[in-house]
Image 1 (spheres, rainbow, N blue to C red):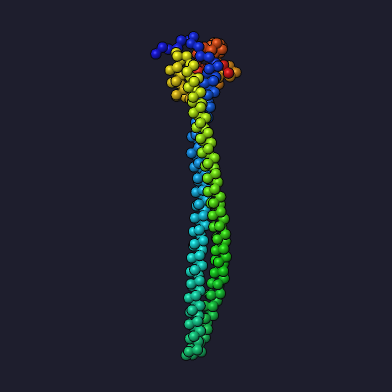
Image 2: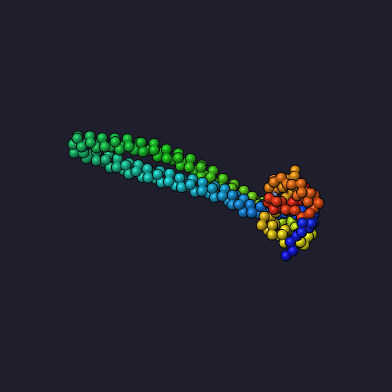
Length: 239
Ligand SMILES: [Zn+2]
């Protein structure tokens, strides 16, 4: 392979065009890479809404079970009270009668407390049902949003793919103009570093690494002579 001589020309116009095109390619490739992450983010919002629905449904189920248990306890104790009341008539003594009366009073007191608790739990069930309804609505909204957002992202990605294909064609066309003596060097650098393989001279510095350039280097660039940045090795061109 012939090494490019220090007088090989690599025009700033071509380098600038190549650099612009490579930068556009980098940008488009970045958008393509971010696409699946954006879709994932949309999906995770649906997952979160689904988790909220599941949690609300579970809370409702448990609250209903609590209500059922308390109702059953109440019924059992009510039956017990009835049983004791039946025994009042057959009480053998005043003492037994009085004991039965006390027991009935205690059970009725417990049932009164129990009834209040049941009312409270029933109110909690109402709240749980409202919350479940809200969570389900949010889930539906998230699912509708997901469909819409994913369609938008897919449409944009399709556009990006088309743009990228066009940019790659343009890049190939411009790369055909690269002097033969530089081609291998260019390919190697661009494959390794993408658009960072090229840098514009900005205020007497390399636009890639910001190293101040010597007058000799600046003159070479001015003359469109093939010049690498002495620091970062990028192809230098006049901005
Ligand atoms: Zn540099």
